[in-house]
Length: 348
Image (tube, rainbow, N blue to C red; front, side, top):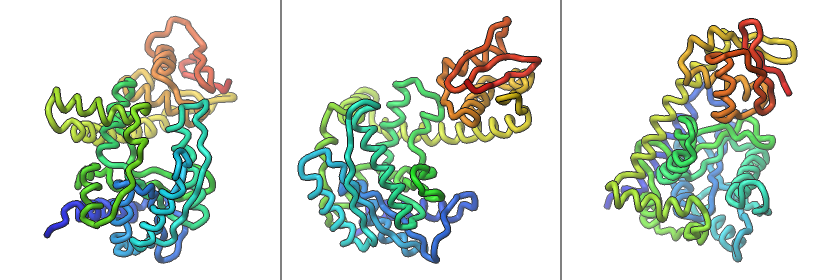
């Protein structure tokens, strides 16, 4: 009997590991002959399927594979769930298996979901530093990607947000310099969905944990998953989740290309100014709005660590395209004014 789901999860992990290891630009910490990767394991179907696939594929890519289990302590019996996940990881052959308990506060900020995520990624960074792991693998699926794109659409976000969850990024917290986050199940082919991970667990004969938070409509993402996407499928036809995930793939290609072009263009037109940086007005005016706005946001982010909203970006851009003597424009971290044919950014 062909175990299709197992084969698809393994293929996704194999492709992600091969692409990462083959990328000459991928920053990896100095490691022994067999670098270590850690699977972020909750005990749910997605992460168990990832753990099993990684346990199988990592040695075939010259890697060692372990796991890190984060107990958020958000519900009764969470320590039992974490212990069971660790036991399953060891049973799959993962080593080392780390179990970390964190304290999550839901007060202030962006709520308990964001707080839990921040705590979780801080654990990933500490675990990578402690073990020398070169990568942390997380089990986001194509369904997670579809939900992310839908939420970005509702917020009115740009192409970078519409590109969704990145399949690979630097793990930039703590002292884990060089380690990366890999998300093998986000790839286009094979398209690994929750249905695939659940089927993989069934084929493997392992029982996943059912997180009650995944059925709690108090969480926005749960409402999207349980109500909004099914309603769209019902009214518009099947395949909505897949289409949204493909939108992320296309948006990421475009966003990566425009970002790279913006960086190249900025290098040619930027100059250092007193207590700041300046950019040629004529060069900015010669570019299309998508590139012009990216250059403005890039300057703000690179020089002042500021993330400009669309409103702030357009206010700065009007100094280029619709200048009637106005200025300066105050944005997060900087004040921007037009001086002698240049757009000058100075720290505030």
